[in-house]
Image (cartoon, rainbow, N blue to C red):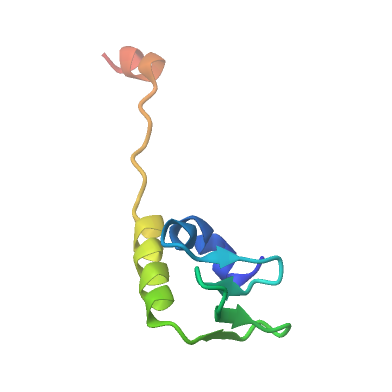
Length: 76
């Protein structure tokens, strides 16, 4: 998986798009970030860095556990 693919939803919400090579393009068609074949990431747009940082914080938040109704009845 390419680096920017995990942030695809967040980037697309801000008008960026990711192609099949892992490059990020802005709404004007300019290449804003890319990943080479060795996995090195380069970014020329500070906004992409901030969008990815905020999206990573959201992804790292712990998800609440689901409470099973049958298990809670047994405990009572």
